[in-house]
Image (tube, rainbow, N blue to C red):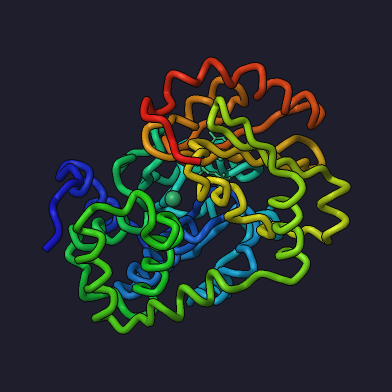
Length: 347
Ligand code: 5GP
Ligand code: MN
């Protein structure tokens, strides 16, 4: 079977908390992605199967392309029912915090989450976990929280309780956080787990199609426009920037999620080591970065945009105009040249 990586002390604490709990809330980060919602629902199915009353409470709505996952209909968005969501957190006797490392990542739900007296369990793979939970299962070297949830379930000896629905959710998270197993995906255990999930009856090709082949025509045109007209290359810094203003987004009837994956596209150019996508939201500019190899975009996001994330996938925010944001990036670019690979790259 798979290797053992989670500290037995944390598992023992978790076992005890679970024995003494009945009303469980599982929550994840704002704008849940496939891993956030997949890990949450996967765990919810298994805890439901052992008789717990479980609610998945997301800070805001699950994006359309992930609503096919079994259990989404029983989940609740805090943004839609703030009072009821706060009551659920208050009345819970155990809260799971999945796929985020700091309470601020749940946005407007932060106060209600922090104020709840319920013991909290963090299961996450982002760097620098905050100290706000009784149990901390934090493994930044693991490619997805869903993979971690699978490991936790096995350590709790609940593997048999993983049904097809749980397996679908867990697989979806493993798949989306590795770009369909194209990055952070060299861990042999990943493929052992996929084999186990296939034996639980998942149709992995169908999950891929349902999660990925879901673009609208206007979103496709927006992505085409972004790559065709708005991608700027900085060859000496092996960087690319795509920026989309509020006007441009409006022109293409932008909806949340329409530019998902766009920031990865410039990395298909051998000459691009790090890619930046800037989106003008109503109150700030949302910064998204991706990189190859050891180029640390989490460091860039933290130093320039008060954000963070993983070595190869990070984000942050900028308060100011798009021009100012791009100027900040351009000014700082040379200071990150030392992280570029020394071998010259093919164009
Ligand atoms: P995305 O580019 O998909 O929005 O985010 C990629 C990763 O960057 C996320 O998984 C998260 O770890 C991190 N991230 C994105 N936005 C922020 C942010 O505003 N602050 C911090 N600390 N991390 C972020
Ligand atoms: Mn994740």
